Image (cartoon, rainbow, N blue to C red; front, side, top):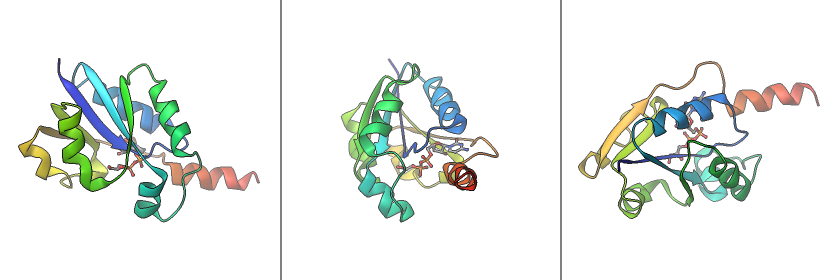
Length: 131
Ligand code: C2G
């Protein structure tokens, strides 16, 4: 059983999120997702997510490619989460290329290409036009 772990905010779920989760799942037999808490997201992006953490967590948990979900409280706890969930592989989008190489001592680390042309920030800007 090869366990894959990945992390993200996954706010206003879109096709880029779904594709990376599907491709992450293809790297193993079981996919665990750490959904960034509201507080962690605020510290990363200086804004509150549109969807609160419990809703983002439940949306991700409902996807067929996802086996287990938890709330990620801190970027620095990745090593603890890798051990806690017995992850063999850490998958991240390549916007994080090289940033998590320190965990190569604990598991394999793979950066997958992002989907071009879509982001939560862009979607929020589009939706505002209809306001
Ligand atoms: N993603 C993607 N294509 C897009 C947009 C996002 O493949 N067009 C991927 C990102 O690379 C990331 C995941 O979807 O792997 C979640 O993206 P975000 O919600 O923006 O989360 P992020 O800020 O990257 O959080 O602990 C690390 C962070 O919590 C990662």
